[in-house]
Image (tube, rainbow, N blue to C red; front, side, top):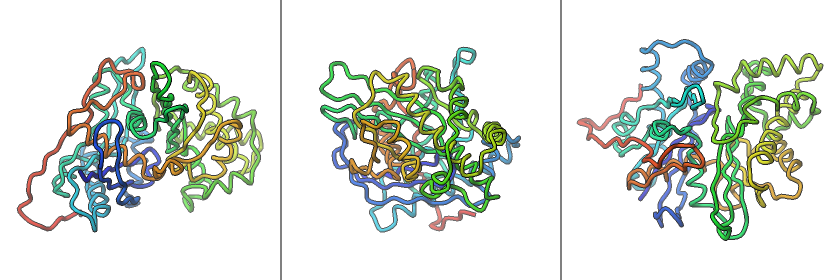
Length: 389
């Protein structure tokens, strides 16, 4: 099958689209060829509206409906663009855009997560069967609904004799721990580790008055000095000491959280570069702390994907905290680190289409394995033109 995966994460920096050809489609070992991938930017108005919602700005139902449609149209555009020059895809797996994520807790046994960008509209506009809303079934089974990529990581990246950690650093960081296949009763683990690029990107936007949206290669942060006193303080946040299963998002590590961090930095008289260096160290050390506290042992190898894998300063700080381990990107394994999350949702869509459960109970905490995603069949259009206005 030719399958398109569509993903936009908490960074809201665009829609990652990947077109794959499954050549060995069993759940494991699973083999595929990446035919094309791209990042399709959001129109500035849509991105601004998404960020406002994620910052808990009030929104009318009518405005939410309009944004839901606009995101679906933009996702459909991304799918058609990545499919250009190739046979028409058989299936689309669309994660949608998360605008609210509330994991279950002792006070709230059922969590809730909202991804908008209507799958039925994507299917209609592209004329390709689409699967969307992947988190809902796991949440209904009292799971976190996240992270969902670990079973795909297990199918693609498990090593016969070496323990591996696959660390995604998007807006939020999350880890998949893949024990070596030769270990007795290997248990795949995974959870959100805390902020990834989110606080860094928000800080750059504010410091440059919207002239930049991220710190290229981490060069600005690399010119500063880390205030470990602040990192120590920030790492006392309860989330870092909460045992998995756990997940988080902008609801916790938001612009308001960054205000507290910036206030702390001001009291310490940090320069802008020092502030960015300290936020970068916060991300790196939060990952290290999670591994130390919650993994059965440190992995032999760490492979990073997502936007953070392109931040050379952040990668160097990770390597500094794991001096006896190899820290690289998933590119070293032949898996494109920019396209990896979109690839995962293409594979999750394939599993849903063929009725393979897609969640891991040790990862999400769900009470049972469930089919992830809602299927939206194609309804042929009576006209050929597509109006994305």
